[in-house]
Structure formats: structure tokens, C-alpha cells
Amino acid sequence: MYDQLRRARKRQMIIFLLVVVTLGGLLGRLYYWQIAQAHSGYNLAQLASQEHLQNQILNAPRGIIYDATGHILATNVIRDDVYIEPIQFSVDHPDSPQNALVSLILTLHRVLPQVSENTLTQDFALNQQAVLVATRIDPAQSQQLQSLQLPDVFLEPRTWRVYPAGTLAAQILGFVSSSTNQGVYGIESQYNALLAGKPGSFTAETDLNGNPLIVGASSEQAPVPGANISLTIDSAIQYMVQNDLDNAVKQLGAQGGSVTVINARTGAIVAMAGNPTFDPNQYGNYSGQTGCLGTEEVYFNPSLYCAYEPGSVMKAVTMAAALDQGLITPNTTFYDPGYIQFNDAPIVYNWNYQGYGMETMTQVLLHSANVGAAWVAHNILGAQRFYPYVAAFHLGQAYNIDGAEESGNYRTPSNSPQVWSPSDLTRQAFGQSIQVTPLQMAMVYQTIANGGLMMRPYIVASIDNNGQVTTTQPQVERRVISAKAARELSGMLVSAAFDGAPQSTIVPGYTVASKTGTATTQGISNTQTEASMAGFLPASSPQFVILVKLDRPAGSIFGITAAGPLWQTVAQQLMWYYHVPPDAGT
Image 1: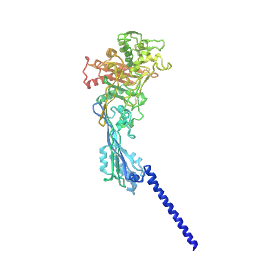
Image 2 (image 1 turned 180 degrees about the vertical axis):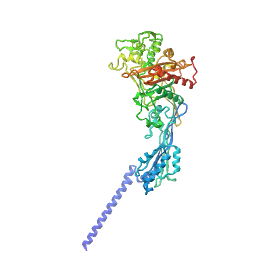
Image 3 (image 1 turned 90 degrees about the vertical axis):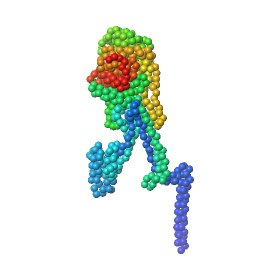
């Protein structure tokens, strides 16, 4: 009896201890949640509240990009993506799930002919969760699918970036990646932060199934729409220039090319066209394609990114430096035997190996004489008087007006003697051994056309950030040469354009100041050239600067016969479109 009583008390003690330990644990846990965690800002009430709150990100509409006349170049549309849930067929159709899936696939193919039957059949298995069938379907297809009320098919709306004009100005604009929603290349990349805006949020109290409660608490922070950007380019001119360039590349069998058109007075970009190009609506189809003589991606703007040896268009820089310093006049003469030999540099020959005898500096440009340009640079200017003007004309220096931009390069006396020699000076005087972009060379001629004042080039006319409008004002970059030197050089370029020039480079009714260039690259056949022409018109009151460059044309390799006709076509269209009055007889 005593042993039984002792065992009973022992069991009671154990039970008591278990109860005490359990209560102690509960009290400790309560202390942890109610006191310890409360000081750290973490509490059960907050957790409970969060289980019944749903937070949704509200995407901001991306800003619209316009041209100078208000035409839309880039905007947004909402299109549906189509999904199906094959795994549900095993539940909804236990007897023949595979047959039901095949039947649905056939129906989808009738509505969405862009998606092949074979692709659908191969991609889907019954154990899959939601599977993407098609993206960005037409509104009519969305409406048709909704009216069919197909089981286990659902539509998800998404915002897509679209470019209504397709390839128009594609290399200026860039595109928006569908996977990251970030701008890539061009304006879309450079101004991505402004265009993207700021997302908002919506928080609502929900029931157990996640549905918002009508009487529940909710809060909303509205998204901030992206800024709208207006460019300086004119869609009509851009279209004509792109079409003309494409035709010229095709006719001449060129590898590509570019056309740059600039307002001579303001520095605003009127048009920039490149070939080859791409459609930003289908940018993925162009992956791996190349431009810039096969060395750069097709997405880059060749006017800004494709540095090249400019050839004889560079002779305008050499003459500008000598005229501005009063070292020559347009009528200064020297004797040209067809070659020139220096003690410290290789012999320089004219492009055609012909001599012109006694000729003026104006005739040096007219004949495009390498010998004359090298003589001016080596014997008249020298390195210390030549290179400051190369730098002042902004050659070999990026402007960074539209995303990625090549700077180009040249070797100067400021470098170590091991990398610079007088041969660089004599060759750079006529556009070899120096690399520039089409924009940089076009701005040389803009400076001459504008009386020696270089403007800062720009392509964004204004930014409207939700009512706060910022407008780009024309800005003087620097005075490069005197107004007198600019007038003298303009007259020399007019003579170079008209005296003996073929009819295909003359614009009837207008005076033209221009220079052609035919550049070869070291180590490459002389039949593989960069054919170009740069100039402005009307010469008496310049309105537009045009630079045309064709990469390795096969039909004709010279600037005057390959690039000249394209330059003339673009110039005529500009005069007609902007109603510029003629300044010369036909």
C-alpha cells in the first residue's frame, strides 16, 4: 500500500514538473513575442495583418518619343499573352486528357495561325503548369479567344514598346528589351531613367482567397509616368534619306553607309540614317548581324559610332588652319609635280599620280591634290600650328549626344616620339592616318558654314517631365576660325564643287560648298574605299550641312561618283521640303 502511494506521488510530481516546464516554455515564448520582439518592431499583429494584405506594383507608362513635328516615333500598347494549363486536363478530362489537349491546340491554331500546330504539340506535356502559347497577340485575336471561353486558357495583358514607323530612325532610337523593360542603345538607353518613370503601388486588405475586400483598408501610391521626349529629327526627311541611302547601297553594291544632315545655324540633327539597320519592333531577328564594315553591331548609329579615315574631305581642315593664321590665301601658289618628297617623311603622291604644275590653294581643293595639302601641313603649318586646329574642330573627340559614340583617334606631337612622326602630319593633312566619325566631320563643315562658329550638335529638342518642360537651346561650342577665314574657305569649296564637277553633284539653282573624299585603309586593296562627300547649301546663306559616306562601294569607288549623286539627291529634297529659295541660276 505504501509503495503504491509512493509511486502515485512520483507520477504526480512528474506530471507537475511537466506542467511547470510547459507553462515556463509558454511564458518564455510569450515574453519573446510580446516584449523582446516588440522592441525590434516585429509583432504578431503585424504578421497577421500582412497575411490579409496584398501589395501590387503599378507599372509607370513609359514616356513617348516624338519627332520635331510631333509624329510619334516610340509609344506603348497593351497586348495579351496567351497561356494554357496542360496539367488541368488530367483533372478536367480524366478519361482522355491527351485528346482534349490536342483538340484545344487545334482550336488555338485556328485563332493564332502565327503559332504552328507542330510547335504546340511538341512543346506541351500534360504535367506542365502554365505554358506560354503566344505573346503580343492582336486585339482581334484576344477578342476571339475571350468569346470562345476556352477552358484552361487565360490571357495576361502586358505593356509593350512599339515603334509605329518600323525601321525609321531605329539606330537613333534604340529599343526596349521585352525581358528587362530597359532601354537598349540610342535614346531609349541614354534617357532610360527619364523615359521609364517611377512605379507605384496598391495595397489592399483581402479575404482568405486573396480577393480584395470592398470594405477593407487600402492605399495607393500612383505611378509617375515617364517623361516625353521630342527629337530634332524630321520624320519626312529621315524617311527620304533612309530610302535614298538604301537605294544607293544596293545600286553600288556597298557594304553599308550613312547620311548625316545638320542644321547649319543651330547644330540640330535633322536626319541620321544608317545602312544596314533593323526594326526595333523585331530587334531579336537582327542578333549577330553587323554594320560598320562588318566590325560593329547593326544596332549602333553609324553616324556616331563608325570611325573611319575621311580622306580628302579633311583637306578643308588643313586649309582652315592655314587661312586662319594668315599663312596662305586662296590664291597662294606652289608647283605640283604630282609628288612631294620630304627629308623626314615618305613621298606623297596625288591620288591619280598626276602633276598639276603651278596651282593655287583653291585649285588644290579643286584637284583634290594630296601633294598640295601635304605641302601646306608640312612646309607652311608644321605640327604646332596644325594639331591645335584638329583639336579645335573636335576631331577624335566624342560628342555623346545619343548613347554609345566612338571618339576616333589621331597621333599628335603631344605623344611620345615613338608613336608620332612627320609622316602622320603629311598624311593626316589629306585625311589618312586619322579616324573620325561622320558626325565629327559634318561638324567641321557646319563650323565653316556658320562663319567659323562651331555649334554643339544636339538631337533632343525638349523633354516634358510631367509638365516640367526643358527645351534645348542652340549653344556655341567655340569659335574655331575667324569669319574672314570661313568666308574665304567657303569660296574655295564653292569653286571645288562647281569647277569641272560632274552634273550629278550639282544642285540646280543653288550654290554648293563641298568636298569629296576617297579614303583607302592601310593593308586593304585600293579598290576598297570609303567614298564620301561633305558640304553645305545654299553657300550664300547656309541652311543645311550634309555628309554622305558609303562603305566600300563596288559600282564606283570614288567619292565624287559614288557619294556625289546621293549627296545631290538629299540636298534637292531638303531644298524642296523646306522651301529654301534658290541663290544661283540653273
